[in-house]
Amino acid sequence: MVSLHNHHRVAGGTAHVGTGSPISCASTNVTDNARISGSLTNILMISNVLVSDAGSYQVVVTNAYGSTNSAVTTLTVILPPQVQAITQTGTALSFAWNAGTGRTYQVQYKNALTDGAWLPLGSPITAAGGTATASDAITNSQRYYGVELLP
Image 1 (cartoon, rainbow, N blue to C red):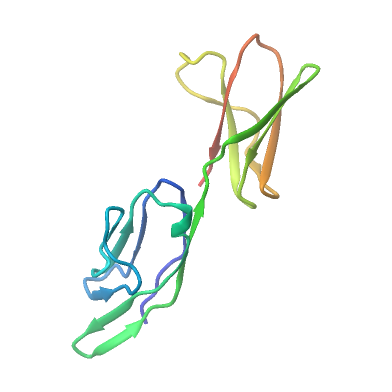
Image 2 (image 1 turned 120 degrees about the horizontal axis):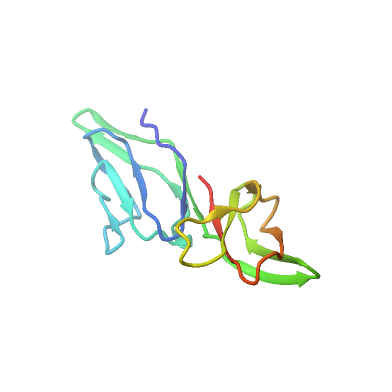
């Protein structure tokens, strides 16, 4: 039996699907191109992963004794967070971003872009649906925000 593991990758990243063994693998319906390499080796690599790359993958392992199919592995492609709305109510700033259900995000901030590191704003937030939200009390004349998808 050949085992593969399910993968979750952020769009634009790199996904590897492989057996980890130096055996002959052939992937049907996938051919090498500018973003895909290794379709006839033991490791299939997809660079600059797109949402359209999401789906089920399976390899056929062949040697002198015959061939066998691996279990199916699933590649899930997650869009990076992008702020969708910013609103101010009194002295509170609220913003919402696209999110993957069950995914965890950390809102970060800087008071000046020249500051060395982004600082966490509160605790990590686990998304309950396709949008996540956070808010911050307005205490400075300016503040810069970012949202990071946590592993």
